[in-house]
Structures are given as structure tokens and as C-alpha cells.
Length: 135
Image (cartoon, rainbow, N blue to C red; front, side, top):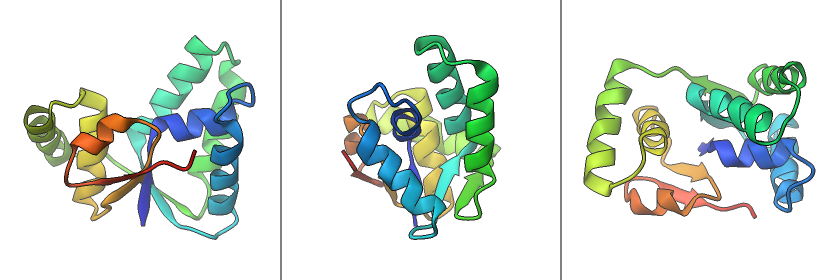
């Protein structure tokens, strides 16, 4: 099983971005049952924030799309625990990564997910997780 980073969902949902098509294809494959993935709950809020605030999408439309993803039987939404936060502190300190990326990585690792779909090279710093760039 693999995880998904926020940027992949943002690209998949924003047809105006050059990264849209490969990320949309990945998301369609997941929804159609070709792969089971885990997504940290913070990813959905990061996507909502980016699409509404940076790309001026209507909040109601973004919410509708994200809920459809959350409701997919092929997507496991991971809750963030106190232990995830504590592990994220360690990851951020050791690998010099940002707070949200560290938290996403920690959340995945705690759930035995060691690979992540992401276009963000910062995940390459975290030696405990392998980044797969679908673009």
C-alpha cells in the first residue's frame, strides 16, 4: 500500500495545472480499484486550502470532490494520533523537513505505509519512506 501527498490530489482536481493528467489518471485507477491507498487526514485540509485559497475554487465544490475521495472504498483515511505528532517531531528534526510533510510521513509510517505518491522532493530526505512521482 502507498500513501498520497496533498500535491497529487491538488493536481488531480485542478485541470488547469500541467501536472493534472497523470495525477487524475492515478486517482481514477485508485477509485476504480486498481490500487488501495492510505491518505493522512491532514492531506484533505491541505488540498481544500490550496484549491480554495490559491486557485480560487468554490469551497462547496472542493468539499464535494474531497468527500467523494474520502468515501471511496479504495482509500484508507488515516487519523492523526498523538504518537504520529511525536514521531513527526523526530522526523522533522532528523531530516530537516517541514511540519506537514513530517506529519504525513509519520502518519503513514505508523500505519506501515512506506511509499508515498508525491511530486515534492522533500520526501526524498526522509529515508524511512520512498517517494514515487507519478508525473
